[in-house]
Length: 215
Image 1: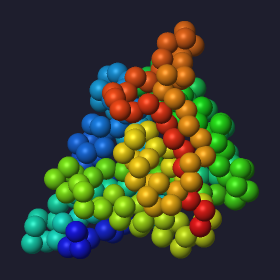
Image 2 (image 1 turned 180 degrees about the horizontal axis):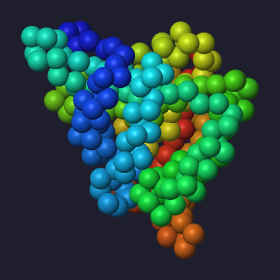
Image 3 (image 1 turned 120 degrees about the horizontal axis):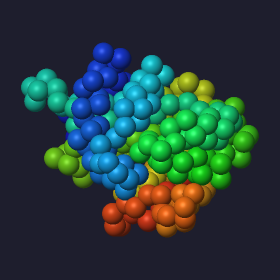
């Protein structure tokens, strides 16, 4: 869709971005759908929006003649070697909540992957969320949004882009962009303190797959 503009999110567009993500990201995202209640916690939404000032979040927007409607978004932000400890601390802070359960899963992934130390880089840009309006899917908008984030990461001097793909669809997308699979954690292996499965996403999603792209 060459008529669709991909551009950075402006801070004053935070509310519009979240409205879009609630409809076209959270409603299908396996970590969100696989835990109850169905609505994301406020802390979850606040975390995503906190990435806007980094300049690494992008929108896909229809032209003015078509109402300038948002049809895609990617949320990304920097992380460094302290990420495993920080995510673990946040998971403990939000224990007993939906966001806490999601963070517990992400903490397990961060501890296992620790990509900044693994690749000996001071920082990376990590992609947290990607959503595309179903009305325009199949037109490579997801790839365009990811490419914008990758280009910005390179411009900012980062040497690595990482992403934890919670769905089979996002994993397929990043493989096509040249990302390398470095870790897989099956949802069935994620257990809470009582031994119960922590996240129960719908089929066909079976795992969180971490991918990296070296820049």
